[in-house]
Amino acid sequence: MKDLHNKVPVITGAASGIGRGIAEAFMAAGFKLVLSDVEQGALNATTLELRNQGADVSRAEDISKLAERTLEEYGAVHVLCNNAGVYAGSMPSWQSTLDDWNWIVGVNLMGVVHGIQTFMPLLIEQDEEVHIVNTSSIAGLINSGGTLYRTTKTAIVALSESLQQELERDAKKIKISVLCPALVDTNLLYSDRNRPSHFPKTGPQANNRSIQKTKQAFKEGNQPLAIGNQVVQAIYDERFYILPNPEWMDHIKHRANQIVSGENPTPLPPTRRQGDKALKNQTRKIDSE
Ligand SMILES: NC(=O)c1ccc[n+]([C@@H]2O[C@H](COP(=O)([O-])OP(=O)(O)OC[C@H]3O[C@@H](n4cnc5c(N)ncnc54)[C@H](O)[C@@H]3O)[C@@H](O)[C@H]2O)c1
Image (tube, rainbow, N blue to C red; front, side):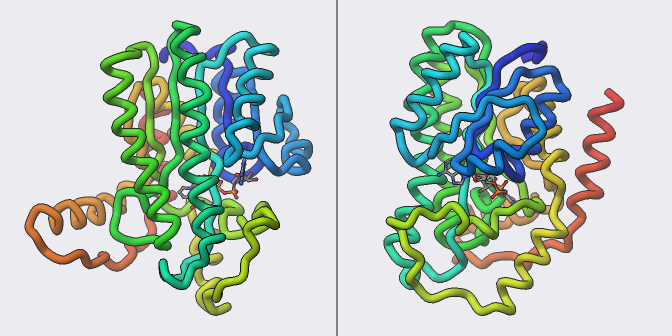
């Protein structure tokens, strides 16, 4: 998509973090904005021009209403960012409760499914250029990251890759990207603030030291606006994979090599972070083109 001016994007999970960074980058690129989040207060507090939709992505009916209201008010949707997501802790698979699993699968995976199921027929009917951006994570491509989180993010990559082929075949005007960042300085670790009471947190928790270490690592992560700028550029370029962190490429190759060589999986140790520096260089290169 070459002209983003006055295009209508829908961004889920837009009150905070990456969704908000995408919204800011979209504003700068000339988009109109339709933001959506369960966090009504945080959305209201943003200084951005917005239409407050208050949709919970794990509820198909909320997403249907979001689509209906967006079309009523704006007449079209040109970019759909299925971005809302949560983190349900780092406990092993069997120690995580079914409430942990159901919550994270409902938001992270079914949230994207609801976005696709609801919007695709409307986007096809609309018959205009459209771009879909599904937020996964580097954890969707490598052999590390919390088990529950990584399971949902890997599924989002698979869903997006398959959808890309379906679109190529049946709906060529609709392009798609999958966004796979490494750590970004957001509120993801505080996801419990939006955890519904029908999925109570009752299982064992990681120890405080490990939580503090993870919080520090997130603080040192990339800034959401830099990720938003990468999304804008990928929409211009019609590029499928958005990988803002080149320093993690060796981890992707390592996993692929182990699969093809028949080795048992072993994670590589985390890369020394060069994210911001690499990202800034990349962004500068894009700016100067
Ligand atoms: N922060 C990172 O390091 C990182 C890295 C890779 C991918 N991601 C992904 O980026 C996306 C955004 O997360 P973030 O890091 O900005 O975290 P964040 O907590 O700052 O933002 C997430 C947003 O999603 C909203 N949300 C939560 N549950 C929702 C629901 N059921 N329905 C609608 N909205 C809901 C929250 O209110 C919040 O505004 C997520 O999909 C996350 O998995 C984050």
